[in-house]
Image 1: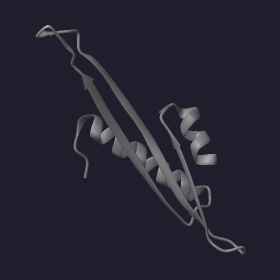
Image 2: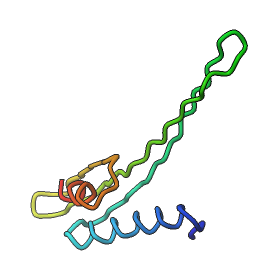
Image 3: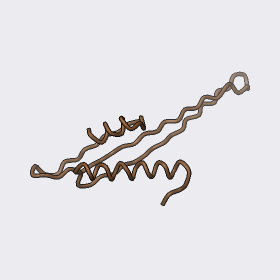
Length: 92
């Protein structure tokens, strides 16, 4: 179900995070990726000023943990897609 390009990379990242969460003992896991783009265009006296744009991205990880104490739900998110940041989110 890959879309090619960056979509495939993000799908692979989410799949890897789900697998790692399950390997760490989660009974179930879901990961979602979000990317948003913001563009601002300002006009002054009918002249377009320099447009400004930003891109934001991040992942959210939700896990179900089961045990003798019952089922618990855990959630973590990060907007930094570095290995360390993703590992911290998985361990939270």
